[in-house]
Amino acid sequence: MLTPDANGRPTASAQPTIADSAARIDQITGAQPAIPVAAEHLLKVAHSVARDASETWAQVWREFNSHGTSGTIPPEVRSGFVPGCGWPQFVEKLWLLKHYLDSIQRICAGSR
Picture 1 (cartoon, rainbow, N blue to C red):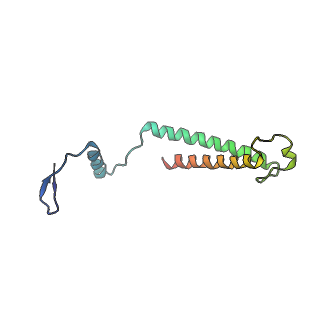
Picture 2: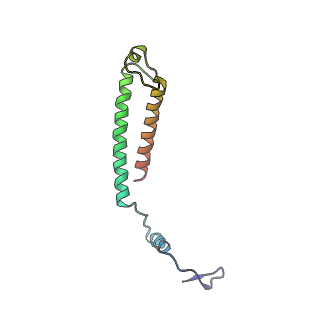
């Protein structure tokens, strides 16, 4: 393939790769690289699962709040179920779970 040098004279260059050719076609046509169909489907499924998980988290959190909690567990609630890690760490894990679910949703939504 001939390409111009710094002075505009044609010079021999290496053969373009298939990727070079595809990139050039995309540049000429203005096409954006497509996400493979299987990957797009996977993102949609992951987004749906993350949304359902986030809704489940919200239901669990509402149960805590129905007892007047805002991150602290009142004594009347402590008398029943007690997590092995203790209430403060359990509540922290719930918040981490919510953070992870929100991150997954943002990743999936931003990839479409």
